[in-house]
Image (cartoon, rainbow, N blue to C red):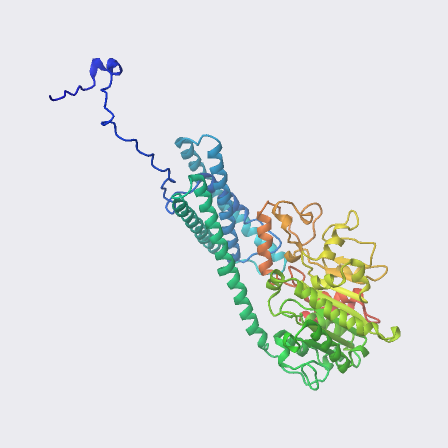
Length: 580
């Protein structure tokens, strides 16, 4: 018999629909229960999705703040890169906060989102235009203050173009990482629950990203820098020739071969002024100066190179001179030639200047890679020279002076360990551009006399003098200092620190150094990023600013160990000669 199917009531009978019992099914007719489909991450467009509302707002704010001034003026290309990266940082922060807010409370209504976007579209262009105008004015004022040419008018458009390109590239990379995270999460979802799958996806992308950055980018960067530096170290600078004098390493009868000196060593021994030049400046007959250097290839170990330097000093009669100066070079073995020349002119050639190479990498790579190299090299060289010098009768000893610049100051401080050790280690020590990692410099600054600024601290307990302007050293009264720190107020190598991320530095609060613009202010994260970028071009500014000291060392030497009869007029005359 055919079974009649009763349709559910409709129309006016609908209210009684729920009263009609459903037809009963036999166990054979009951379908088996089906498993619930697995919950998978929603498929969303990632690469082509729109911008985050909060991310766009934060990006605009960070972009405008990136044009605020810092210690040094920035070229249009660097400013564009800085602005783009800063905007990307703001976008990441804003997008993360927006996502967190949506998790904790109800999301905004579509109408509210439209209104917010309308406000952004109306306000952001105006803010960007004002920021570009102010940023251009600040950069021009900074350049004029530092004696640099003002920026060109079309630099603004180039800066905007580079910043947009940088921001877009970083946004694309971030979305590719999100896409990879989604792909890994879907893959892990086959074996583990949803929360664990997402965590595993994030962890997998993080590990892969770290590997790519560490191996492919950082590793290759160091390898390329090593290969490039090795090639450069084997070369010889323009105009550098092997000395004919037996008083120079690499010259006749030298214990150090010319080829083993390296590029910077060859420049060092060949860069001394001639006897005629020294005589003309001193107004009396000058001696031919001694310069001794040992390169990486001159001996196998640091100790052997230091012993070779001392033997070379004995060969050249270095300890018979009025002054013996030990120079701790930068990472490549470079010594700014204006520094040793200043001593040679001051003492009319009655000097013996020595140095030793410990690396051929630039200071940045040497500092990040292995800071112990410079400390070990400074200890080996200074220790060997001091031991030979201390063995002489006190009445026959020459003045022993020490010099370090940038990374070299770190090596000097690590050699002596304490401020007292640095003071007692020689007859005088000149340290210029000390790094933020210098332990003795940090200790002296933190324990400075109350009321003295961090950029020009007073330390009455020891004969130590700080100067943010070398001209200050000409007006010193009382006992002469034995240790002088030259630290330009606009040197980012001196003032960079991790604390800049979350804490306003002392040099930006209260009374500021004359060179620091009053328009500079501290912003969390942004100021840290700006000072980090300032270090890239800190050597591309005039003397007395940034990380450039050069002839300023004349005033430093004159404050520590001036020759008899030396006057301020002599310092000014020598500085003019070196800068000419």
